[in-house]
Image (cartoon, rainbow, N blue to C red; front, side, top):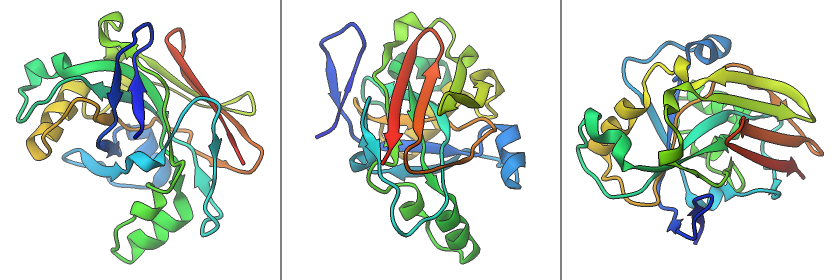
Length: 218
């Protein structure tokens, strides 16, 4: 079973659901030519998609176009259902950084056919995830910088201030659909700058001054 760790603490959380938000930054919506959503766009990844610091991404043979998407990750610390927006931050145990890997060619083909695209988002190694900074040490999660470097070149650099659907709204909305449990992880969307990665690439996702995650592509 995969576990999440809190930096500076011995406490661990068995990871349950990985709930993901798409189309949550206007500049990323524009770069992919999508329509802005009225409500949060939700999809899921299995816990088997997780890898951690220093591990390897394996791009499936059925894709020739794998993209990186850096995201703020929320670690849920206690169970909740129908959580009010004004209480939502109290359910977050920690903040981390994740890379939502997307097989863009596979996703686009399945979307055109009106078919589900889990195989473009949930394959093994599709979710590199960092350790988590304790929530108490993050005074304003809506003002964090997300940065993605590939082979030391900056590809993405955006602020969580630019989210369309903000963190308390996301937690509240999710909890109205799924009971949130300790160890669940929410990925909150990606800013602009997504691009392809390939064999031998070195990826570094970070929230400067808080947390960094480094992985490679086999």
